[in-house]
Length: 155
Image (tube, rainbow, N blue to C red):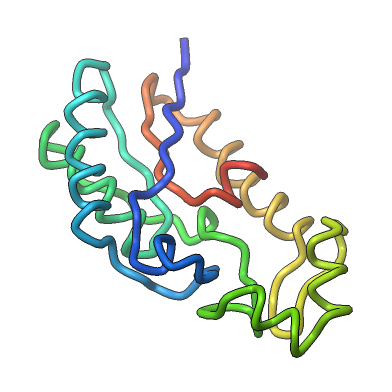
């Protein structure tokens, strides 16, 4: 039976500070690296034969810990990236709300076909995530660990 193990990346300084990252390539902090090692230690008991990750370093580095433990190479897949937040990336939402209150309100409302300027719609995120997961579901591998982001996993 096919089993997919979904893992959200470890902590970054941006996570800890409440800053949106979106598709900014932000590395794990010390706590995130420790979380990656702990996750790898826990997952190594399962017969995982393939590792697929968002190509952003915070997810790739989380996956790399399990790859080292299992002797597997991590396969990057940009379709597993976080939602692109456009003009909100790298900023606190409270600051964005002061400058763009209507845009933030629409984004918070969860409209599937709305994107902040320069960003991506939730529908687009869902479509590309679905395509990646359909490919993984069709693959011959029985046990696959998938490393991604909160938005991607929610999609």
